[in-house]
Image 1 (cartoon, rainbow, N blue to C red):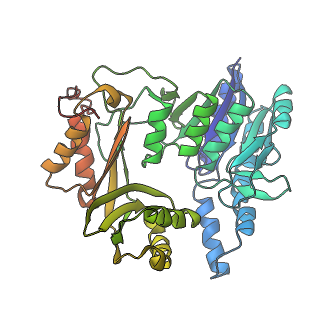
Image 2: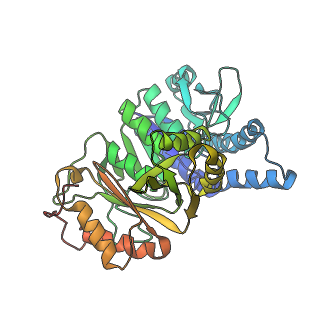
Image 3: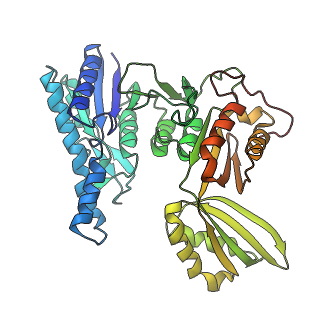
Length: 418
């Protein structure tokens, strides 16, 4: 007998028929001799609909505490309905909110992090033969305040709960049947990966791949929780996310991701002296603005230019922060650029294979596109480019690295060591 945590996203429980399908799947797993803990998201577009309701109620920004009270109801509906559906199939089940299941978080509304899990109630219910259904995306502070975990919170709930109850595996069910080398809607011959490392998956998730949330992958890596990503609509084998993954022969790049939520900010004519960069990025950090790629140009007549990227949604706030420290930093002007995309290649095999980054630069150049910024790590290279031909770029890179199912794999070259 295995202890399995099964997580179903909003699309998997989007209506009554899908809810019934999930119930059948859970009961089938239970009847195969496994203990099941199920984590579910709100049905379909419920969360967005609730947010839209607040806009009809008030034109002002709602209090974050009340938004958590409101948004947490979406998952509460899901767990109750799924429990009812499972009962109708003759299997006992019990549903819990996040706080009933022992999910404790920091006192931050809207994007709280889990601080502790006390799963005794979950384990007791399992011991009584129940399927246990837990609301994702939510928790409670030590003071009893309801909180939500932010985007991807149900993934994080599932993985954290799997770690706390020492589950044998955490299965993430979604509307695709695994992790692909890139978005199969863009590249029809994208390949499904049988397995991928935590580090590779974490990079892909951070770089725009939306199948798993980065916080969930980070949690899985830290607590060595085996993950499987699979479809809720079929029984096909999914993708295993684990500490080490077998390398396919000749496959150096495992996947390609893209992120359109990118803006470039340039600060021009900054006096070259110690502490200038620290002033800028300290101010941005204090405003809770994440900075990604940073590039500084050469110094001319004692003045330097530097650029960095932020989320497009943070651009206006970042510009305001920088203008607010103009007197401290003394720059000539600040500019911004939109209509950009960050395209990234990821693969553990990049560490020891020459020519990988060069191949990326060459492929993008052959399409007549300029590269605005570059960022690298041991297992990824990212390029910021104009977003007008994104799909064409992804397809070209996919082919160049031998990821198409009908082309020869890329084996590297002498050009560089990244």
